[in-house]
Image 1: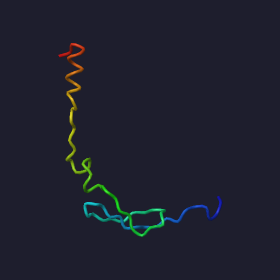
Image 2: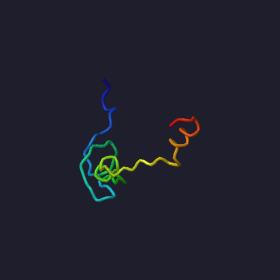
Image 3: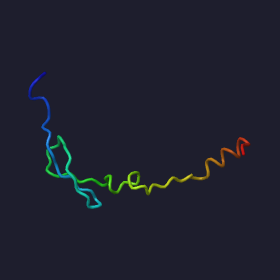
Image 4: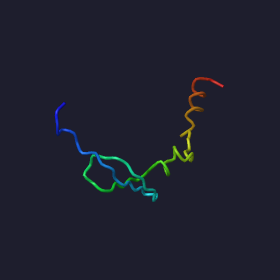
Length: 68
């Protein structure tokens, strides 16, 4: 294995737009990362996700093919 080809891996403080902070690892040359969304505010993890049948696609399909 070649030496000195791997990037330096270090811990950084990650700050979300919602105010949550946590420690993560990165190979970037920064001391702090700022993100827009994290597991504390993402709809998938909070359970506030809304599934919307846009334009009644299922009803249009059933009507088109004569399904009940």
